[in-house]
Image (tube, rainbow, N blue to C red; front, side, top):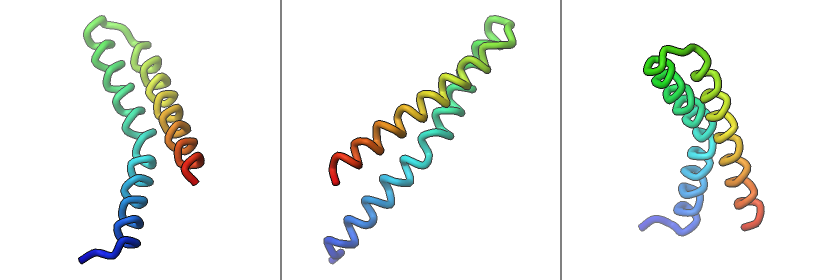
Length: 73
């Protein structure tokens, strides 16, 4: 039977791994949306706009998670 401390450590590892993946995933999603819209509307600038929006969304979510973590401690 797993120890309560082991469960807590594994839970923290999972949480911090998900936090570490927020920025790359949000960046990729933003770029993918912009790329698709560029292909659809035959433009060249939307992938840059959505790339920057994805980066911003990743950082916003990162700050939200870290501030929530700081409030719990």
